[in-house]
Image 1: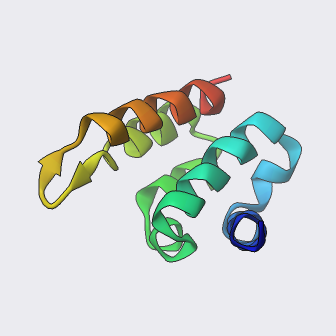
Image 2 (image 1 turned 180 degrees about the vertical axis):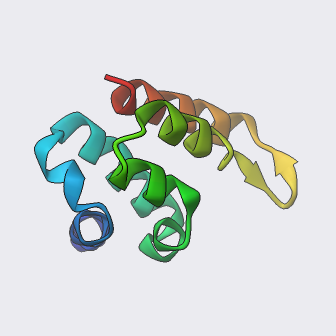
Length: 88
């Protein structure tokens, strides 16, 4: 879809290191699709990815599981699925 292409190109712009890691790129593109590239751009997650600090990136990714100030089960499960791809 057009929205997915926007998420993909934005993710690569913010995290060019991911071009060499297709599974990690898929995980962070999903994050960008879900939350918007702007959130990725301003995040510590982006900095950890670009430093190739994968365990730090997983930790940061798991922090994005709240909606309305509450931990949401669906977002926690989504972040867990993304983390599995990111941690390979």
